[in-house]
Length: 312
Image (cartoon, rainbow, N blue to C red; front, side):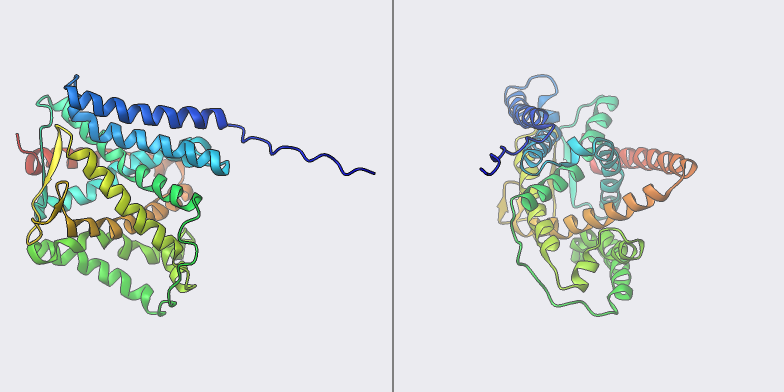
């Protein structure tokens, strides 16, 4: 009896959508670059968020075609919530920067409604792009053999204390301690993530597994370079003023400044894992209160950016 003929693998159900997203993302990046280059409309002001959005959807399409699941295509609701949460999350660093004064914004539209819309749009692209790059590296099978020594049991107590120090020291003495702020959410919330049963870097470390650390670190560096590459060509952009580091730049970012994207990526993962777990457990009333709190927080940050971080 002849063996049954082997069947070709079934395509993933949304492969056509994935191809369309990849093409659309690439076209969006190219269109944003062209608009910024030739001064079309608000192209110069929108280059960074449009470029980041284009990269995000292009990567998502590629990831889906490779493994049959991706953040945007498979979980669009969660993706939208993450984009909204990204605005509030990045707002934390903007608020800290009111004290640190490490960057300011130039070239934003004079009309407040357009300026605020572009600001919020830009903040909404931060976390999705970094997470998509992490998925890309994971799907490509990189860094599979990275390991570390298991962490000591006292880590759960020491990390929040370190997080408090990383926030307090820069607020009191900005010049020598400003780089520490990028690790604050990671250090403060990682034990919370482990307690809640959320995806936890601390649990990985406890097991001696470091692949997720490595993927996030590399994704942070890649995302940071992409942001700087877009920013340097944009009309509306940020300009850095980093104490003791304002030399030896790649694009407009001091070389050592890129290292901040590594703890920032850890913070994105940990804070996002905690937020997602708490949101899933919250009832309708609590979610409504959280939504109102997010709106008020984002509004306060947007006004603060205008007041403290924008150069007319």
